[in-house]
Image (cartoon, rainbow, N blue to C red; front, top):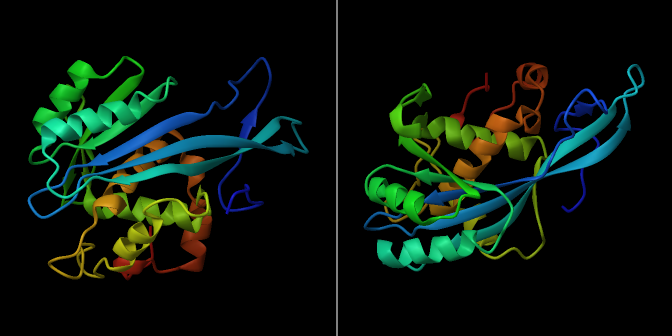
Amino acid sequence: MSHPIENGAGLVSFVPGRTRQPEPKAYNGLDLGRRKDHSALAGLDLLWFPRGHCPVTYAHLYQPRLDIRSLTRFPYGTDYDNLHTLVSKHLELRSQKQELVIDAGGPGLPMVDRLRNTLTANVAIRPVFITGGKVENTLSGGYVSIPRRSLITTLLLVIDAHSLTCKEGLEHWDIFEDELIELRGDTSHPASSSGHDDLVMALALAVSAAVRDTSQLLPPSDERKADGRRFGFIDKPLF
């Protein structure tokens, strides 16, 4: 799908001279592979589309959309020295300001420090500890902890709102779909011990940052309560 939709994501009002016009933003999510996993990098662009005027205030209305720019799955066994170089080159291809949300658990801490020291000032780094808990917490040093279930739930909600799109034929999209489908209903982890979730988690990290800045990417809360839909692995109504 390549065009904004008439419903789903919420609208943002812009009043010239009084409010700030929405601006495009770039988000990236980096999931670091462990011994049996790939590392993956997902790139998103937050775009805004004019949707006319408010009939009451005549304010300009804009609808947000997330376009998946890229899904990169690095070769299995890529060491962290090479991964740092590959990620840096990928991010530095773009001159605009962007955010990198990185999985800081396990081997992620040294990678966070290294990227902070080497990436240009236009890349803001947001390290995240992915937990099995239920509550998001802000930690020292710019770190946050986010439950895995919350990350994937947010990704599913954005998909449900039709706020997430990509170009036809996007590389690795088929792998991402397979990973998402294979998540277990009771744990949100891959059903098979040999399964992977690297692209799902990389995209979920990027989406979480975009939703933090632009909540209108989600379906309206009243719709989520009214329809009682069940989402994949969760097996219960959301919120």
